[in-house]
Image 1 (tube, rainbow, N blue to C red):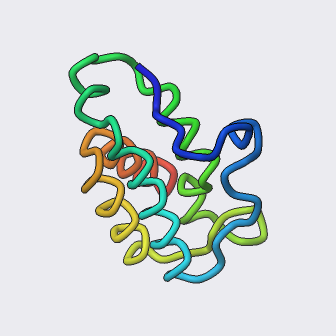
Image 2: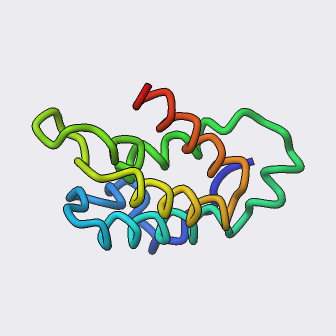
Length: 110
């Protein structure tokens, strides 16, 4: 099962995002963009019970996995409050991937 790419033909080789969010609102908007991509086939992917390789790649490409990291080391420099909102946005579209992101951020922080 693969994530359905909703970009125009030929755009699949281009990165979805070329810049990292800088404000809390931009991070939350990015999470909603990721959620929209995940929502397209979340039920089918969940039923397939396959390892979420493409979904993890999507989280990495979006930058969401770095939201709590210090800015000087390439992270987003955001607070847990923003991270919680990001996790909730992703989880609303795909609970399993939202949980995965939440656990990643917890271990990253710890």
